Image 1 (tube, helix red, strand yellow):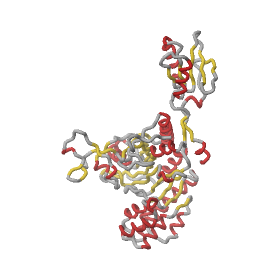
Image 2 (spheres, rainbow, N blue to C red; image 1 turned 90 degrees about the vertical axis):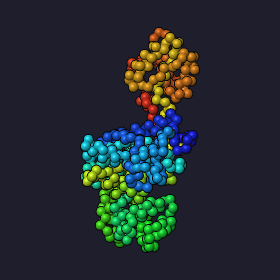
Image 3 (cartoon, helix red, strand yellow; image 1 turned 180 degrees about the vertical axis):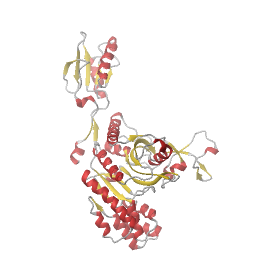
Length: 456
């Protein structure tokens, strides 16, 4: 079970917990690279002006300053945030947009990128929300235009990546901003961004409160609020949502475009990732830069955790003069996911350390020879430690047991070797140039526990 962090909002892992996180990260990297995504890393710091270009997250940004800074270097000038001041990035999408613009001359488009880094947000820490956490993003960005087919591909890649992790079943809940905005305009609500922000609060405050918000803040009539909530109530695991939307009797060209795009995503998902995707017309996403497909992902039975993966299409996040770089991408909240895996014992590492073998010492003079044995084992990919001192063999075995090391290697006075599986007590003659542990012991294995395996 994950420990409570001593500094709230800044989690740290024990070695066996870190092995679970590394397994998650390695699995994501493998799937992303299998689909042709290349890795990048951007700086942790951006200017305040760059970070606050889109969305309403100004209260969540951590400003960066020196302890010895003078008044002229303050992050706030005249009561307003200095756009040239520095701050830690709160996600990986905004820095990626800047990266694309600055490096456009060196990139081949459509550019496929994955990025796994820490981000920082000044939120109130709670389950599933930390102030420092790791995200894993994938995006495809085009130069001038980006075929809609990439919206479909991104969803399928994420479904494959999540399916490879030791987690409970999940659902990608997908909507389309064009569909929603076109519908709102069709019923006479022109402040579509405001409606989206209100609908985005639906699961937190419920439909009655959202209806009140629409009427009080946006001037919606009872009928308009009811229509907006009717749209948000539509959820299907196939393309039948199309007929349900059309049955609401709203006509708008943008609505038709978004409806067609969402139909393509769901149709492909039903064929290639059955049971993993649902059309959910309540999904809005709070940030303003999304322009088409929007996605949120929940673990089945753990919905209270919130979305573990989100994102969508953005057509205007990155630009350079008249040159536009539209893109589509999704971001997995790795720390949120790992925290739930650990707190609920959803997966476990087979041992607490990478080491498979401890080479015991018969005397202090045997240390050099033990290092030779260790070097031979390591040359064949077997993680090996050498005991620090020549204690009684029983103590050396107990040390290996405390560390979680499954095998102890002994060298007899006549130069022969034996290896002991301290879990079973079996001890056999072995040769350092050929012996290999069973495949399941060669490296740390991370697997879902029985409760997850039976639920998937």
